[in-house]
Image 1: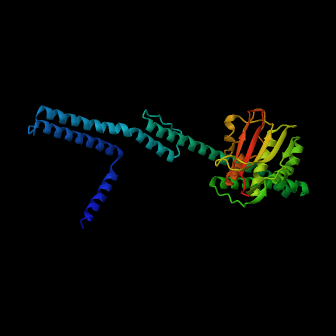
Image 2 (image 1 turned 60 degrees about the vertical axis):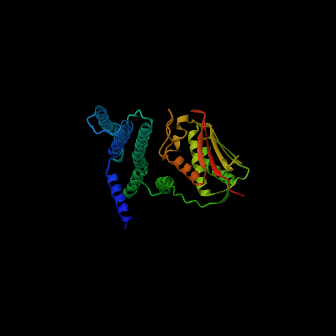
Image 3 (image 1 turned 120 degrees about the vertical axis):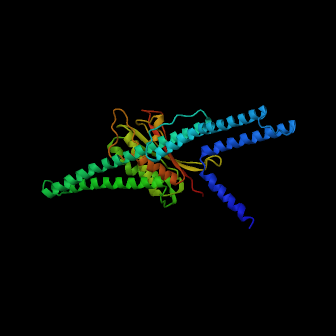
Length: 363
């Protein structure tokens, strides 16, 4: 039974301690330090001068007066130390309510300044996420509005006898339905990218052969826009991948390169194996898509992989029909394979190179 009572007291102490605010704990800790110091000084005084029974002795009065002043200072200091934390706490409540526009001033204490800076960074990130969420709704509504409006007009025209139900009309209806289907597919792929829920059907496959087939599939579009497309993928590059997903990445990269070029431009796609050096650089299959088009500024090289980010170039309209999530999906597919997609450019007007990296399959 003896061990039950200490356990009960420990439980009560924990409950009492949990009810105390941080400010109270700091004040009590300072007070305890002061009392221990006073007690030590009193004990030292008695050892040196003998027992002192006169509590009105000037030395004793000075000692206790100093202790009282120290206690008051401890309470004041605890309030001063906790005030920045109260400010951070209020800021987190505002973030929870969806208010991201308030920026906290950095305190002078380095540790608290780092905490406040992190809260400000979190607020900025949440504000950017909210902006993208609103833009998502706007972009999806815009992308769906046009084909739906066209479909409605065509169907009403067919019903009223204005349009003839011929092959051209049905082809137009099919194009608009395909546009809606592609948008729905892109949004579904984006959702899987952000959830990390891509299902890959891996098998050993030659990425070089896949690059050649994808280039030939898109060559008619290149010919229509008078953009030259060269392929350097003669050496097999075998790896374990989902060929349908990798083809999706290649279609996106080649499509973006085509959109970046003017007439008589040039795009190349090459595939090679990189043996890598050291444990941090394993063997990889590299696919490089290079164009001589509009180029990318240094500040946009990573931003273009964010969802719904479509670069605007002066005097050049944005590609029609793009949803702004193709590169986000492409990078998500590459990372699901353990690789990545990166971009490089020498700046506006100097073209760009997109590199797909896929870990090499063990032989």
